[in-house]
Image (cartoon, rainbow, N blue to C red):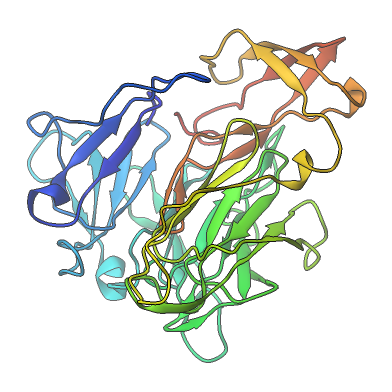
Length: 392
């Protein structure tokens, strides 16, 4: 959230489906944190119980909660609500498009747009909502996926989605990338991308292999690591088969249809309930897998993947930041040590703190801000506002 905490909303059954839980990180390099999760039901909880809802930090710092079901595989909860709850009676809003697409719209992908709308991908559809009324501003063509029939991109037909890097001066339309998914058992072999405030048309790119329950991690060089999942089936216990062990890279700086490259291969199946997240040193932590398929075990091993920028012979740069609480458009000093290469060839990126589950990486953003250097002292300009860079 805007205070830098991790939020968990909803749950599996009964009262847990209305729960709102907070975790405040308090560790430091080499020192484990001691804080525990906090839940204060008397102060804050959801108006409606939800299993597998989506959540997003809005430009004003509120949390938008979308959809879900009444407990595990229960009746649909086709509504939106906002945390903290606005004053008055029930303030949740029912959406016909959520009801119509249940149960294929869980953990929808949500993005704040620079034009002040909210972009949402659910099942095989997408639309822009007004941030105040939540009325639909614009709908988009059905998302392409398979020639055999309808294909979904969110749970249980689970792919993953990312917003591509935003570069100063932030005048280009943002582009959303969504990879993998399923046509009700037939895993998809493609990614789709769209500029919701630009052309508004889906562009499809072929991946090297089929993948459902896709895991994607944004890397600090502006690329995306795609891994895990299966080559057939859908998300859920025992509902997918043939693990996809091959990791791949998507590089949006390359020409369209030339953006994929092959990375390493793991020996550990990462099926249902697997995740990956970027570590502070640029490596990627890969965990989980609970397929319950009598073929692949419940996985307790963790892996660390070392991306190409840490294995190509270059020495990792270091930097010092004194002021860590930034405001929009503020300018901040960093001291840089580059063991190799001139400062003139340096790039600076800002990677959003994120949490990830079921293909949805909440809080994910990558920025390449404006900066200038005098020797090893550099001035970095923060993004211009909450519609470019939501708080948190």
